[in-house]
Length: 141
Image (cartoon, rainbow, N blue to C red; front, side):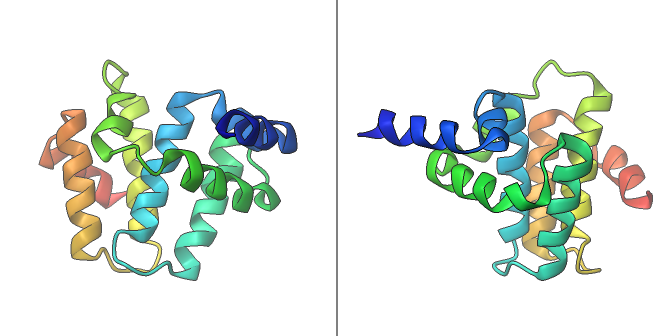
């Protein structure tokens, strides 16, 4: 039963429980995972960067990241990019900027922003109401 599966996940791990209880965090992580796979290949640098973001920005220990990714795949696979970005509507610019910096960081992990990564970043930026000039400023950082 689905409820039993969810309960099992939540009972299993503090980090998974934290993600499951915070829709904004879930949304951001879904977007970051989508960025890791945007170019069709998960590169080791992207995964390492994702783990660092999880540890530094969200206090998710590296050893919990695989369980968090598994949770996101199991329960977030039907969440569209638009749905995930909708969680950031009405947020202050700094919060949106942090999301975009994290996304750009993942995209740049392998020292090349691939076309699909750039397109995903553009799409998310458009949904957030962020301009091309804003993105250009972030890319300089």
